[in-house]
Length: 113
Length: 115
Image (cartoon, rainbow over all chains, first blue to last red; front, side):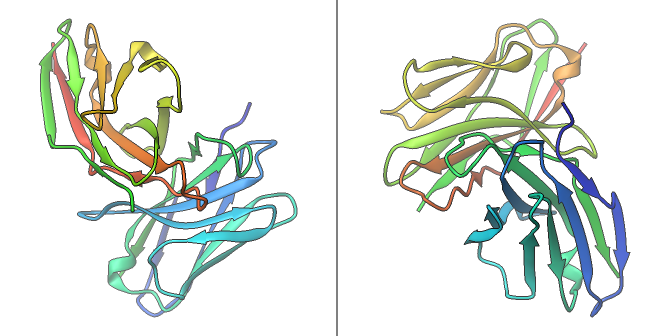
């Protein structure tokens, strides 16, 4: 069974640009979560999508947004990039909104210069 | 609110010796607790979870964890460490009353197993 996949592996952007990160959940999983792992800040919850709807949002500004497609894949968009957005962005999926464990992908390393 | 503390940035242990990685949590309700491991340049791998029931839970790769409600702890253990266990370990909590499903992670503990 394929795990959570994310693309691209690495992304380099300039301050002020927009970044789009993509995630495909494990087959059969309907919930997708996004986390940011920034140096010195640890792992922080960003967004949760389930059945195409945004269900919860972490303490991040509105320039962090995303969506979930009918096939349950998801994309995270970060607008007006700032240097401190440089981080590893991890996507996770779970079997549904009532599932307990979340399974993580390998992440996308975003570097903002 | 929910929070997790991993009091040790790094744990050093000799191969073959038992290991413990500490985790304490704070939630307003009852906790769901998780351990994940992260190898260099990789995502998080799920190790084990506590939802309810037996306080000692067993997980992948020979790891286990003990839930202690009175001490609000969920320490990760392994009877005999391997060099390949060297990695970054994260404890995570979700309050049972948290309908938002978000996991709150500790800061991580780097485990170094020396031959």
